[in-house]
Image (cartoon, rainbow, N blue to C red; front, side, top):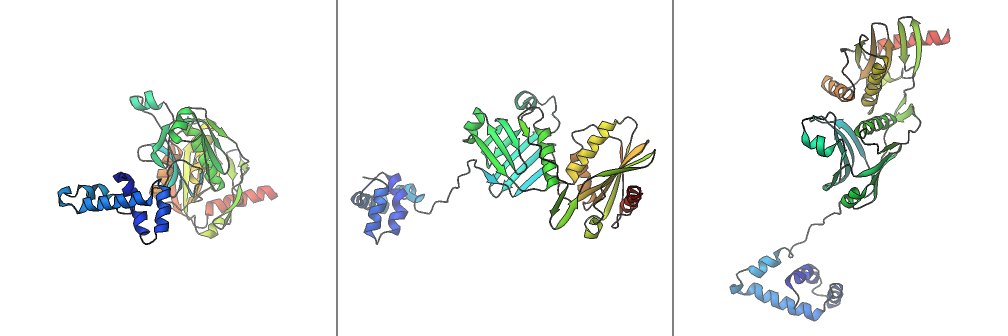
Length: 349
């Protein structure tokens, strides 16, 4: 007699082939039984379900087999290509990197600033990056011997604990992102893994030219000096961007130099450029250096709220700076165009 679980497992397939004894025979062979054994079990369990003394117990036991079972997709970690790469700091001050394609994803998390009184973070996490793949069943703090960042992919090499948890030795996530987005990803992974030297950066050449979403960008820099108190770093090849209509809001960030080292201000510039330009929603047009204060000139399409949120994300890893913000609507990029005119005169003169 077939046990009830085996009978139930076979039931839907055998019932669908009820008019085809040859097909039923094949199904029985797949399950390691005979058609005679199936017919015997079928008669037995049907009789049990018709017996009032059984009180529905057999029917209840078989009920889960009598309807199509949902297809459970295998969510174990496998290589995939990310259609989205999301980088942000969430409301809990946790740095997030999400590589996503449908149900497949890799999510990396690390706390930006650890509270020394948080025993879990201090004693257990110890600065390790939390990684989850597809499902929380595949998640771990650390778990890697090496993380390799290439221009088009991220490769995770698991240690023994990671291999056991992830059920694989390594995982590759490919992606296609813009040049500034790659710089943002590189910068963010550097901070996330800075306490554990597992990150290997290939440091591909910095590309300043590309066409993205139909717009040509050349974000290369040049510099010139007007006088002893007016030195300018400027992007001379973005003068066509005002015509796109994307960057009408002009923001000037002023940093007083007293108490601020040159290295710290350069870190500020690098962080702002990496974070703000990643999606081409903002362009840093120039930086003016003076004795009393330095200024960064930005053109953006972000709302004020989103702009300030991104400032906080950009500067969360460096010391606080004495910054002042001013803004205006400037669809023609007047300040930039005037400064570029001085640049061209210097260059051609």
